[in-house]
Structure formats: structure tokens, C-alpha cells
Amino acid sequence: MSFFERLLSKPRLRSVRQRLAEDSSAKNYLALAQEHARLGELEHVQRVCEEALALYPGHAELTRLLERSRALVGEGRTRALTRELREAPRPGLYRELAELLLSMGRIERAEEVAVEWFAHNGEGLAQLLRAQARYQRFLVDRRREDGKLVQELCDAAEKLMPRDERPLRLRLELCSAIGAWRDARKAVSQLLEGAPGDASLESRFRTLNALAENAPSFDAALREVERSGKLATDERARRPAPSAAAPRSIRPLLQELASGPNVQAAIYERGSTALVQGAKGATAERTARAVREIVNKSRATARRLGAGAPLSVELEGDFGSVMIAPDDTGSAALWTTRPALTAAQRQALLELVGAGVDAELSSEEAA
Image (cartoon, rainbow, N blue to C red; front, top):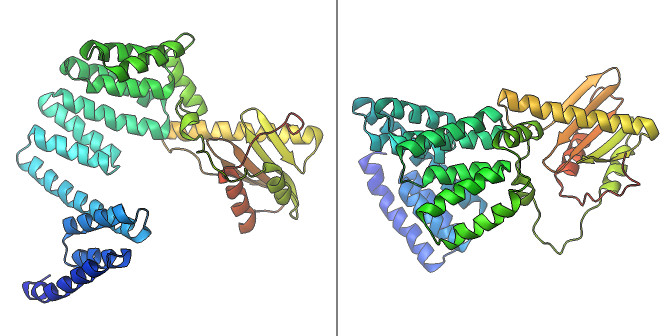
């Protein structure tokens, strides 16, 4: 924006500010933020949006504008730091760039910067930041190789930073995530050596001590996470908050799907239990077993490829078409003799698996 255009915009900015002073509505906050955005004043945009969202939490347009302004500020700072590192690299620049990239979700690039930093001066913090980046990748892909590398990088960082608790904290987070409770207990014990009497650590140690008795080894826990695609913390994270709303039942939703034309079977599975509508007897059992096997193999393949969690699996052939929608808590599938599912069937299937329905399946309903 030219100097002349900026000069002309000042009266309009004062007018918007005055309207906001008279009426602090979300609409007026948004107008002020947009005016700052038009002027390229991204830091002002962030301040206005943050102030507005404290009063109107969850406002969609303000949230979107705040996220966009943060992304633009981050991208600009990333470019500036990259230029400075090319000209005169130093630890402070490497650290800021790696941490910024991590906060932006650019995990691979953050790890590349950490590797370059460590090669430049062998600093322990570079190894820690690389471990943090690889841990974020592990949480997405659930690959054993990533988890093992996080552990190795934590070892290296601890040796280079013997009085810094951050590598131990990351190790504790990793071991707790995969259910390697004995290794997690050891990490807490080491943390207590540096902070004796810390109430939160002592409480954590007592909890882990109770879990550690029959806990798997670190390697065994990693193998199980890779096989199942599930972390030890997943069950707690996905537990629904208490609600006064009545739970939805799976059976009516499946019956509605199964009643459609050309539908052979509608299936919902969770754990070792399955509910099947449409198919009967041995056919129902075979179909449910096949769906479970397909989901497990698709998850394992996606993890090996580093592709994250599969959102849907679709099969077509002489039998017709099958669509499976896997989820952390269960999987839903629909088999029809048509060449492809209709848009309505696809939507219904996705709604079924993502609806947070009450999946209490009785033994009579199990296939």
C-alpha cells in the first residue's frame, strides 16, 4: 500500500475504532480486524481478534482471521530466519526457526533444521528439538521406527544436557503414550532426583508404580501401537464428556442403512464385537470378520507408508461395492450389489461411525 493510500485510510480506521468503542459487538471487532488486515498490520489483527475472542469465544470469522494472520506472520518470520541463517548461522536463529516450524505443524522441515543445527555445532538442544519433531510424527503415523528414534534422540540430548529435565519430560510423555509404564516410572524417578519432594511428580510415580507390574517392555509396547494403531492414551482422550443428551443407538441406524435397495449388509464393529444387519448366520460372521481384517491391514499399511490413519476403504468387484469407515472407537461398513454407493449411503455411513453413538452391544447382537 502506498503512503498516499495509507494516509487516506486513517480516517476510516478511526471511524471503525469509534464504532467499536460505542458498541463492542463481534461485528465491530471483526470490522476493525479486517481494516488492520487491509493495511497489512497483522500484529494489530492478532491483538484485536484475541481481545474479541475473549468476549465472543468460538466466533467462526474472528477465529479464522486470527489463524490466518498468525500463519502469515509465521511464514514471514520463517523466510526472514532462513535468510539470516544462510548469511550468518547461529544457535539462536536455528532454535527460533525450528520451534516456529513445529508450532506451524511443519514437522518435516522442523526436523531438517534441527539436523542442520546439530551438524553445525553439535548442540544438545538441536537433538531435543529433533526428538520433539519426530514425536509429533509418531503421534500421527504410529510407526515403531519413529518411536525408537525419539528414544535414541532423548538419550543423546540427555548426555549433552545432563542437568536439563526436558529430554526426560519428553521420554516420559512417549512412554506414557505407548503404555511402557516401567520406562515411564523410571523417567519420573530420574525427574524426582532433580526435584525431590515435587508433589505432582510423587503422585505420578505412585500412579505409574501401580501400572508397572504387568507392563510391556518399551519395544513390545511400540510393536503393539504399530500393530493396533492405538495409543495407551487414546481411550482416555476419546472418552466423551458427561452429557444430559440421550445416547443414540446403533441398531436403528444400521437397520435404516440395511433397508436400502441392493444392500446386502450393514455392519458396525468395536473391539471383538460386531452388529450386522441384512446378512444372517454364517454369512454375517464371515462378513464381519472380513471387514475387521481389512481395517487392521489398511491401518498397518498406512502406518508403514507414513500416510496417517485411513479415513475410508472402498472395494469394488463382481460382488458389488463395499465401503468401510474406520474410526478410533469402531468401524462401520456397507455392502451393496450396486457398482458404487450412492452419495446418501456414503454420508450415512460416515455419520454412523462419527456420531458418537452408544456402542453397548449385547451378546445376542454379536456376530
